[in-house]
Length: 444
Image: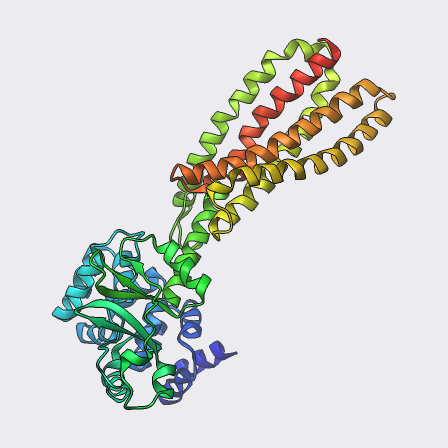
């Protein structure tokens, strides 16, 4: 309804009413609305926004919308937007833009901001330093509460967060003070008396996902970032942590589905790029599946003697793949949230074996009864398939839980050991187990 109202005000050129309406909207809602507008309508709406709101809207836009907007704005308009943005958000924008657009953005930023941007760009992409905000409020331990509150009033307007202030001595982090503590303490008290000396912090080269998990685990609004000399250089806020976890989850889901990770949106990615991202994995899985075909060829004589054996292959392969995928998914999730570590590998295997034993017994009994009824009360066949089912389920559970842990230990993303790869590996193993058991039982 709001979107239709905005469009109507645009068509009627009632810009005063439109401006008032936009002031009552959240920046995220404005961005969602603008995605359905054409470029001319986007520009008209954007130019009616207040400076602070325009900067927030610009930050929340996708890369395509930002690039179109940058190309349409004048240098002075662009400078106003950049001045209102926080440095870490500016760096995020720069990393997504083409070189010619980056040059233009840097031209309209002041020297001080440019230096801060260059500092952040020096850190590896997966490090805490690359996402930290270098604008924070630092206090001295000899300050009074009144002095600290006065400083927050003077400089807080330009900081992304003021809820926690950090106490430094010769740039080294020695404590932290919440604004709540400042507001409830006596004005004459010293910061040294009320600061918390046990400050949870991270280093600039720490993995940004680990830092995001720490923020989530301890319910922090922000975490201070220190360098190798323990000097405070910035902080990572909870909103940046949320974006990191979202990106990591998206990447894991893509890998688990056998798709190369892609930073662009689904509709923002071309058909050719979608095909490119998917083809490599499909090619590898297809070629690896030829091993299963070779093994089947090796047991051609057994299948010629008992053709009925072929009919059970899809069921066994499907069950094995599903069991392995269940275990790998749970372990990958446990690794992602820090619930499971590599040191737990034997505990995990022991637990999965017990689960597999219970599951396999139920499946084997049900499948054995089915085969006994459907195949002329052939008890030997029912026994062979029941035994195979138990062996396949136990094997699948063990492989499914072990491979992600080994991948993590080797420094690989555990998500690569997800459904597509696990299923392909288990197909081969299932065929080997199946024909070894049936050839032994029937003396083929």
